[in-house]
Amino acid sequence: MINKKIKRLGILTGGGDCPGLNAVIRGVAKPAMNDHGLTIVGIEDGFEGFVEGRMREISRDDIAGIIGEGGTILGTSNKGDPFHYPSEGMNGVEIVDASQRVLKHYKGWGLDALITIGGDGTMHISNKLGDLGMNIVGVPKTIDNDLEATDQTFGFDTALSIATEAIDRLHTTASAHHRVMVIEVMGRYAGWIALEAGLAGGADIILMPEIAFNWESVMRRVIERSTRGNRYSIVCIAEGAKAADEEIVIRETDVKRTDPIRFGGIGEHVGRRITQETGLETRTTILGHLQRGGSPTAYDRVLATRYGTKAVQLAVNGEFGRMVSLRGLNVTSVTIKEAISKQRLVPVDGEIINTARAVGTSFGDE
Ligand code: F6P
Image (cartoon, rainbow, N blue to C red; front, side, top):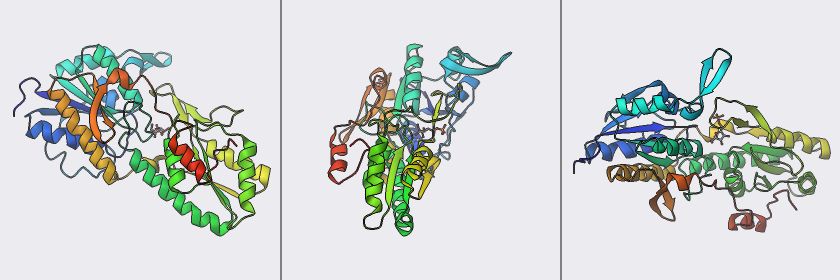
């Protein structure tokens, strides 16, 4: 079937990269080219490239063999929000509205629709571009898994596997030296990676943004464990976790970023304080971008491919302003407006938290 309505389909990856981006690009491009005869226009480096007018047409060769590759063949950026675009002015960096430049490129390249693959920030921008008249279909990406309108974003499963493996490795060295091992994982304001990797890796303490911890409870648990069995503890901590009487620990703020806040440092803070208060030997690991790099898991490859093919169906059917979404076992779609209305945080009295508590995990709040 050759599609009569749209001929040129743009595709862009926005925000931080995430395992599975290339699988989505392939999942879009194959049916779009083969079943609908569309030309795929790849926008380079996310919205930054869109503002600057950088694109290339995607060929069959470009998408061959990329399903298992990390990163994105298009490049990405978390600094190019067209509505708050950083531009070098007389007084240093000025924030300007560059959305009309994006609209000009969209029209100039003859795009009939655009698939945006990204997280929360990308969906907010997509919603505003839709209001300017662009035909947008969104695909939810992020290792943080913090979009309410989908049961799972692709990339999360890979990050979870990497974090779990890291905790497994820390167990053996922690046990050998009878140390407290603190591991800081990503996730911004959501504790999904810390919770699920901590649970899967058998962490003794999980600290996350949704449950403010108290120091006394953390110290009590590590001291208790230091007198039993192998005399070690594993503390899995989300970068956005905070003590009840303190603020979130931030590495830096950068106005050029879509989200100006760069998290990082809570792991070191907790590790230092454990040593000071208990005298126990402590080591801290910051897992960082290892969680985002490399090959996606089989689950993420499949989910990303399903998202990509669904996004093409929506575009071909003229169902714009929608984001593909996983509900239960099915891939469906929701409006982008609905998708950005709420962040998906860990429910504190939910089943997974209760499961972790049932197997003896401390959340530092007892
Ligand atoms: O949103 C994905 C994410 O990996 C967060 O978990 C993390 O806080 C952030 O991006 C890191 O961003 P950057 O790659 O810009 O340091």
